[in-house]
Image (cartoon, rainbow, N blue to C red; front, side, top):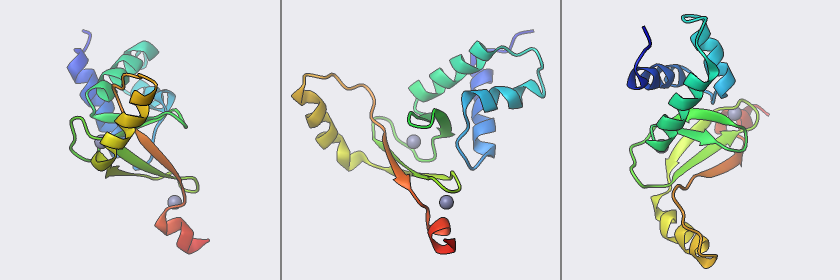
Amino acid sequence: MRKQAAVRQSDVLGILHAQDKPMTAYAILDQMKRDEPDIAAPTVYRALAALTDQGRAHKLESIKAFVPCRCNHESAVPVLTICGDCGSVDEHDGTRLLTELSAIAAQSSFDATRHIVEIHGQCDGCSISS
Ligand SMILES: [Zn+2]
Ligand SMILES: [Zn+2]
């Protein structure tokens, strides 16, 4: 029997939460195949799209990977700091940036639906050890 979309989404979210690093859709699919060898890629893509739409997960556009949402926000701006060395991702609340970002988009009459800010660099742990 096919699982319902909501069940799929929580399966995928569970996998993301179990990792402390961002995962690509392919890596998630790989992991799900351990339990369900015949699961199709679009099933995973659909679940990921729904999760990002709902703000329960975020997509890191620059590295095409997903992280679970670790804060609680509806229309806020997630700010994700990504360590280039160990790949760890931290989430911060960037709600204060929303007005500024909307103003920038509005300059070119761009109708923004979703904001996400990525900051790349080195995390505390990695900068100490290097
Ligand atoms: Zn979030
Ligand atoms: Zn690091």
